[in-house]
Image (cartoon, rainbow, N blue to C red; front, side, top):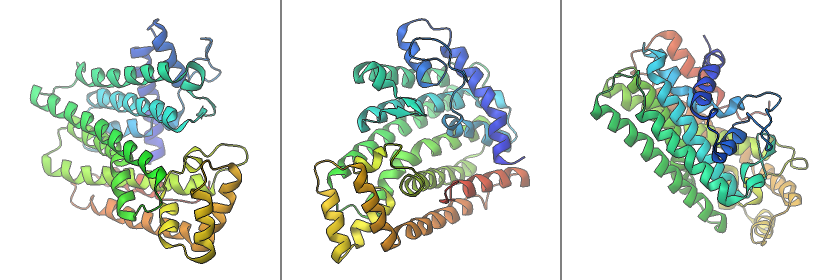
Length: 343
């Protein structure tokens, strides 16, 4: 079974669990959550699909995938999967507010309809639901000590996300961000939750500590790969005329931009200065920016970094005692997220 088949297998399981926890709630706060998850329109009527965007499940599916690879029972990883999905979406709601993004998954963002204050409430509520999902798991035979460890892993990931977001926002006002700065930032902003997702899945299958260490490294590198791939796709695989490129317009320092700012000379440096010292970037600036990045080989550089991280990611699997099919699934996943080509 390949990774795509694993994801398809788990999607309906996660969807069912989410609906069991949220759909029956009538308090208006939960209507905002249902809207964000794609189940209803703003007026409360069901959406045509009635389902969550599958992209919101990918990280949440990892506990189930890892659990199965290590011979566990899927029901033992369900609470971890639901917790990760809820915590991730809590962060996405807050991130849309921070970045002023008017759209999410092809329709108006939660805050765009309900305003920042109520959207913050919805995001905070989702975070609380995520912790409760992990605490209220009845099927998993965890000791109190293991449960406390699991909650600690989830909370540490949430704190890392907040720290990473803080640094990410701070860097919008800087042009001297180094590769080391960038990697440290995305390790927290993007790597931490993927890492915790992998580790929680392994814990649910009763993995030994030495396996947990290797899987933690795999998860971290996987998270870095996802972020760098998104950096590449946002610059080169997005129709900037039809869709607002929020991270770019907000002067976020993605890897290609960090490389360019660190290495630009002459006219390239002048153009970048003209763009990044403006008070507000416009869509027209993106085309100029991409031209400079192309002339400097920033995309190729970013792909080389991505390839290097993929090697580190795969090397962490060398000492794992898992089936060939399980390892193949993890290798395929690392390969998918290391492909910076436009689809």
